[in-house]
Length: 629
Image (cartoon, rainbow, N blue to C red):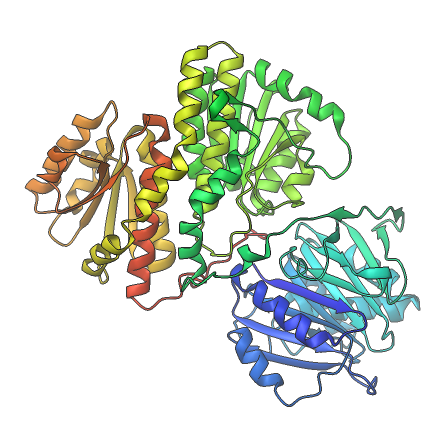
């Protein structure tokens, strides 16, 4: 949520900032703004802001002076204060010397604002961000100190999360940035002559592949033509750790598709091949998944502990949010089935606030697409404080979770731009499957023959997904019938129950239709009261050990006038005779079925939302990465 871009160098800043904001639109926002120190005019900071899309900001800045080579920009997702031009970032200090952009939440902003008002400061907006920029200026005057010191004084007073970038009209060659619990990355141009700052690497990747990931409670000073300086809130020097990134820029474009979401649905065969590459060698019937050095800094001890910890773990705990939590529910079944290890799946937002029993011989798996989810990061901190070994499963290279876990692995599906997660979900399932099969084989619960058979079937999944995608036009036709539905029920059993939850979430996220996912057997414990001709029911009913039971559940819905959509295994004539609409997926092993059965649900949600004229890539009120509570 929210997006930050900053630039200092030889080029005009404005086009780089605007292009960066467009790259960050997927994060979700309701207003945008830019601040520039324009050439030949150091008397004031030029600020242009607009409510709505980045295109509205471009219109507001049209024919304005945008000649500067230093600037900051922001897309805002409202927390304190309604979406408006006044509340949009950047915010100015009272003197007009400082301009600030900020991601995160300052929890004690109200107290700080009252203290500053008592000292004569006035406020134009309802935001916590304006409080922070005024607080920095206050300390600058109080202590007669330099800007970095004033930032340090202020940040030691605030409670909450922040990623900030600051410019000072009196320092036209300087940018100041800092972060805590909200991501920030600095890109380094050639010969230290230009620097790029952003919330993640997507706006930076086309200009440089050398970046520095800023850690919590660090302050960065960037001066034109000089090496950056990093210090912490105790004024101690921190070494600059430069990382080389490899971002596929084609993944950042729609590639001819009308929306990123549809492109990413269709990306899944290739993405899962990438996810398996180097790990699964089906021709030799071998599978190998090793931990990656995802903490930027050598941590050989953690890597060596990897197999020892997992082999000897008393229990696995999976912490995640949203779609990643649904992947964790399937991961639980995988680990318990193949590894005979008890698994607990927790909402990170709940786990962090109770007093969970965590033991040193527990392994905690943290699953997150962005690697920046605030609740999951807090759950990791709690788990590590109690001695658990933490294994991260993330997509975003260099993300906070990647750097704060003991070890882990990337899912390698490329940047996911659409807010509603699609390829990240199937990537997470693929990694969890490979981990469970590998560990189960090494622990002796899987024979060599079964292990070889299962890995061979896993290698066929990308091509099978391709066959499901061939039904896109037909699923779009089915979606026409449900464009104006008010409610939806998704039912599944066993491996497919979490898929039902995920399908319902997708429909809610992008079409704004109320949808609920349930275990099909639980229907008779309440939800069956809702069944009538106006309640569409989608059954995820691929062949598995509970197939006949879910067919019985369909008969119960049919007897009450419900309309049934069923996702079934190819050639299923029994369900065809009951359901109003069927969508077929190829036959595969039961535990691999979710990788196929989820695809039609992604497409159905997409097409319903498109039929309603909604923005599927940026649904209302949602952000791609939930970096605040």
